Length: 421
Image 1 (cartoon, rainbow, N blue to C red):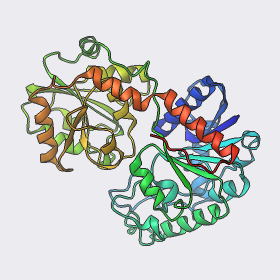
Image 2 (tube, rainbow, N blue to C red; image 1 turned 135 degrees about the vertical axis):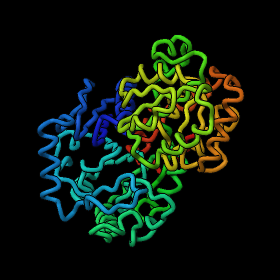
Image 3 (cartoon, rainbow, N blue to C red; image 1 turned 60 degrees about the vertical axis):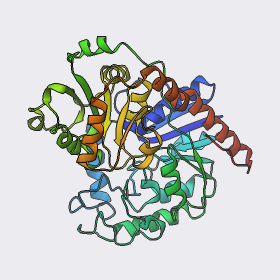
Image 4 (cartoon, one colour; image 1 turned 180 degrees about the vertical axis):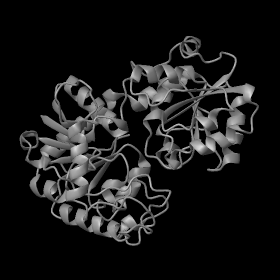
């Protein structure tokens, strides 16, 4: 069986998930290839890419994309502040003409914005397609998280995220374009890592007729495991006598990640009680001066991340919307309890009082109350139990085996649905 994974980048949550699955499938004996638009510099077997991230070709591609497709691309300003991303179903590249696609038995799509053009791709590709959703964009008119909006169930007209831009009707045009592209494409199975995203996709105008499956993302449990906390605190210069609170996000500018809520909540505690470790881009150092803190930027090395989770007493993720965050799964695999809001797929990951705590609502007072609850007894959780429980849910072997079952089903054209736990 030959499987080709398509993802815009080998970097980020979706890219990492695609690479991990690709490598595990190869280990299981499948002929697997990973085809990305961008390569961040990783050396991975059977990984093909169009260009290197931040290379000259990357900048040329960006310029051409926005010049040639300028009337088909989202505006540059005027978005709602709640907009995380808003991307087009158009693309310059015709990846469907690549020999890898022609030779594959299964096409596995991941996060593909700016990589595949819906109309050209789905018109040309008639092979079985597995589509793993890492956010809502594949079935919306352009947004990656819709918030409270459910217009993706109908026309995406009057999109609240772009209503103040120069192209307020773009979402409905994008949805129509996607619908036209998918009109005759029946051999698609949708996979979601969370039940939350599964329910949204199943109710969408574009995907409601497709078969849906739930398969959690998998992780390397030999990397993300329980280690000596004291040694890891020493390694990063974190005080042993303070509760180390860890926060991690790709970019701290994303409002949905809730970093501003965490800062406000922490201001209600004596500064000598805790130490704050922050991972991510775009850190405003001025707002951290009042805290004992360590700021390390964006970390891509998995072993370093595992050590940082192990150096933490608690991982706080006040995200306001999310699918099934890699960071939470990684923290739990390292035995680190998690505090978060009961939103999106996060609600499926935290067991209140077992592997962390939920805040009662998505407010600063509720978050502060929950952190206070943890600080009153920071050793109340069994880190080994948290790891063992997470290992049952998020190990890469189980993830790959579930996908192999789905591939086999699609190739045999078996109509009996598979139930994944």
